[in-house]
Length: 271
Image (cartoon, rainbow, N blue to C red; front, side, top):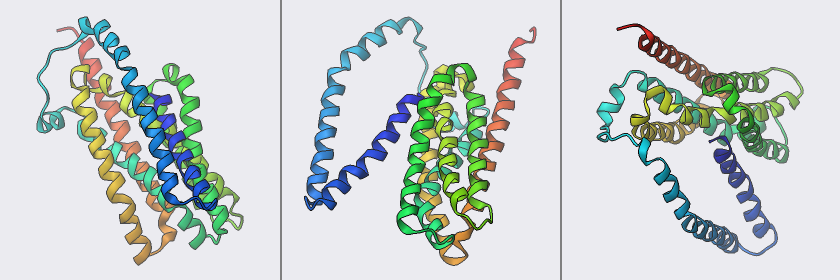
């Protein structure tokens, strides 16, 4: 799961360079889109070729399949702990997208960083996520989802504190963006991966779908909300906005851990 999302970061980082190559070289934006389209077609062909591998995998797992009726939204939300993970996932994606979309503006407008330097370090946020997920893939099984999420949140908080430090040098703020990316790295994959354990394998597909919907709500609405705050109050509130989201994510995640621990303890008690 970590490596799967690591390669999302690879695509997110490489694509702008492909487009910039065509724009700066005078080849036109349409050729940039054409190249990306060709890459997408090649990937689609590879996916179709790999379909038999998925069928073989399904056949191996057929004995372990759990027959259950699909959960409705109302039924899924009523499962103990689901609202907590929805808020945690909402907070994570709001944190990730707000950090990514407003980093350059904050560095330039509030800290007076050179535009080119700000853009370069804002892009390194992607590098932090990508490299962090690549590394976490090697240790994920040993540490477990709960510890990975906790480490990710506290690392993100440390990066936000670096961004907010009222010092004359901008180096700490620039490094802080990379640290926030490293903190975000294990959190998203670990939340998805922990779903079958937290809520049962039979419920995991429905709940993951709802988690993704909650994530996209955070992605869609929270960066514009900060834009409204930046326009009408101050863009200097950027670190405060991020730390509030991180604290909310930590609170909901730890509360869910407590719910799951109580459920597992109840299972061990003699009937």
